[in-house]
Image (cartoon, rainbow, N blue to C red; front, side, top):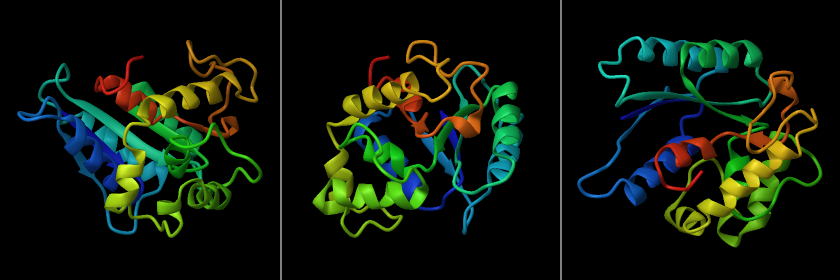
Length: 201
């Protein structure tokens, strides 16, 4: 049982719905409960809700809480990340934005501007069905991602190895001296797919 606390109200929710429908099976081997609010949350709000949910778990062996949030232009990103991780929440942090994870299904990384606008523009150019992408994932866009999960995970790991901090590796992850705000571009969404057995570690 996955409880995913989401910063955004659209893209992350559409993506996780698709992952659940595609991979959970019948009977389902996992369930993803999406926790979100209209107009979204800031990282602090995501961390607060995730910590609250963590305290409500009946069976921590069978239940996990994940916090999905981005760098974007938010405040308190480092503090929110540290609080969630220290408490045992799994953090799917993306820098600069969640759309980086989608982009990695098609290309190895980001070229040019490494901000949210730049990543979203590159996603629109990466595949014809994303040309008019605007937060919601439609059926054609979901299908375009299918079968590319392993490539996306591999590319996300390569971004860790290429992290500007020079203390990070795909095998060990980001080093303790690597500041969260400096991890650009990077995304940890791949860890959920590995955790669910969708992609091998």
